[in-house]
Amino acid sequence: MHEMALAEGVLGIIESAQRAQHFHAVRVVRLEIGELAGVEVAALLSCLDIALRRSVAHAARIECAATPGRGWCMDCARSVSIATLYASCPQCGGAQVQATDGLQMRVQDLMVE
Image: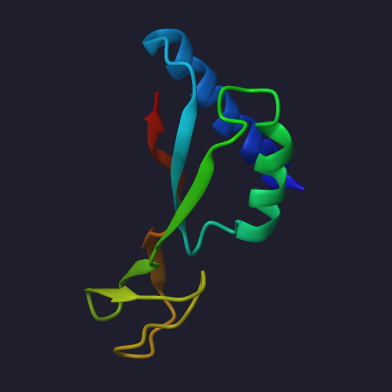
């Protein structure tokens, strides 16, 4: 389950920020998760619950914002919305669409005390 590895990565980011900024608690963790990133949000939240238990973020609220999928169609030279990787272009039907956005997952910010 790669969601546990992602949760451990989030924990690492929180611990690094805590060492640098010396805060005592994290109240909110805001994540940005691309619709094309292949992340199962419910599984990630379960893994975060486990990974953050003994950390400064043990009581933090987790907020997830979705980034829509976008791609560049090489056939019609347009940026288009796509719901899945390797989707056909919704404008021209072409099959040469390269995903350009919605692939990432990142910690957007932390609300700390």
